[in-house]
Length: 403
Image 1 (cartoon, one colour):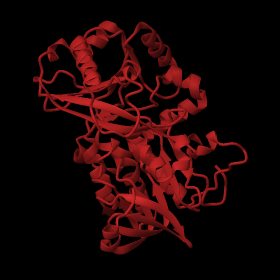
Image 2 (cartoon, rainbow, N blue to C red):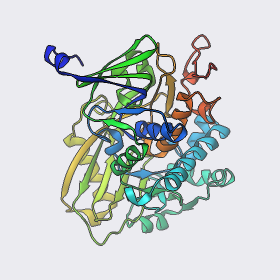
Image 3 (cartoon, one colour):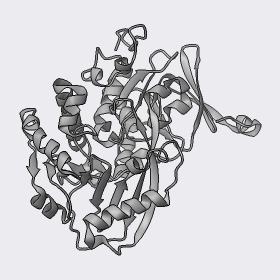
Image 4 (cartoon, helix red, strand yellow):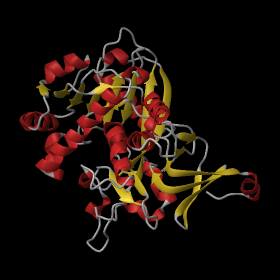
């Protein structure tokens, strides 16, 4: 984005702070929260291009799930036993912090449990095979056979499900707004950042409204990171998600969130009876790439087809809203934390791969600890960009160590 002659002349006075957080989603607001919690006198500014939670944080289904975007057996194969166990522990800690540090009623948190639902027999076998490993690693889960899974869902055609008692539902936009308010940071909405540049010992953010000068910067824009720092495009790519919401269907018959078909479909019923359904991007890979905020008839038809096939009681329900959102996917489907090139003491986070709610609040604490130079924060090695870099490209942390 560039500035016109008139925008340049009409900008308001510069704002100075200790840390400027770019991005008013959950990761950015959680980072601001923990920066102020760990160092209360810190001056923190959150700079958001639109409104708080206007990106993926406010466009998802409002699931608070544990674990990675893959089932446990697949995660073991991808990441190994120790890392998989620690990733699940990280997401459990995320939920614990949300319920212990915040007021759940402020964002309609419902401790419902969750179902990871099998769309095929092969997927059901993987879910069942993962149960003993998950229990041994501290997750008290249960596998439900097809009859029980379909009964719990009031659905049909599913091949089984993994019940995770710690799963929750919430209002994601309300969560972001609440965390931002609790951070007591100065929030600048409608301030799109055009440029990030080093000026002596400070970092200058050029926005269309005013300049923000900070000692350190956190870039928490997820999929939009390459638009600010093009050299970081190898760590995150934009993937569009689409959703729909039906008119209220009462009485409410789906009391918990369902994450099905290897996560390619996800469904919940709001307490007003509306069904919220998203997914089907695996059927439209080439189309669902990039930054365009739009829905497509073909994918929306696939969502309705899924809904009508598995939940006959929803046939004929009017779809009252359709929307999309852009997610940031990393090369290995796990979040990435790195140092901003050329800006000592400044960091970025991206690549939450559709699971930002499951990581976000705890990840904000991790980001804050890195920014404040805490000695080798716990769990940093799970997410650092160093896993993608060659030995000749070390990540320099604020305390001088390498990631």
